[in-house]
Length: 272
Image: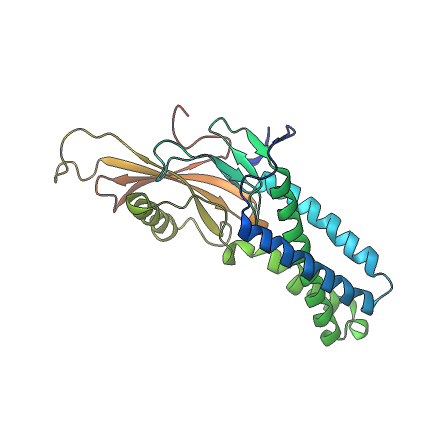
């Protein structure tokens, strides 16, 4: 692995599973069918607009493939025990997961899940290209000076991708009950008490929740003892992972006692 400014980049080639699918089910099969239909319709629209329609659709397919591969490295929900005491595998990929991750960090890609994620990204790029074309026509692109064109690209082409963490949830476990309460309290403390989110870190994703064994009963003397820990992952512009954050909660799970910032190459739990 390579770590650049605390950001983790996996350099080993991932393993491909012999199983064709791990995440997709019948609803996802319907999604694939609808996506293929929409890809066809948008391609027909481009064919009616320009003779370069084939280059556009194939070019966007290649861009989508690159983004699909990049999502394997950028979007990870590690294996976790939050609301899963026996341990549950994590996953990689976005917006659809296509690789399972075990507690050793080994990832295995399933082909059909990868293809579905690629298809969804291709559809999103095609729809975005139509929207950008319509906006460019309304903007009267050929008549505008270079500075206004650059501003148009910045506002409608770059900023929406850069600010995606503000609007779209990242991959993360879905805890229930007590673990959900602890994760919510920890996230609120990180955002409002420690002010982690802001101009640079735009979104916090849950990685795991750990309950610490504490001797004795809960009373006024032990209220400030650490009772649980929550691990969060911060994302910055363009959904690039930035840091891990470990929040120590008191015995009641309401108050955050401390927050520790960790690089992505350092696990949240000691001895992990």
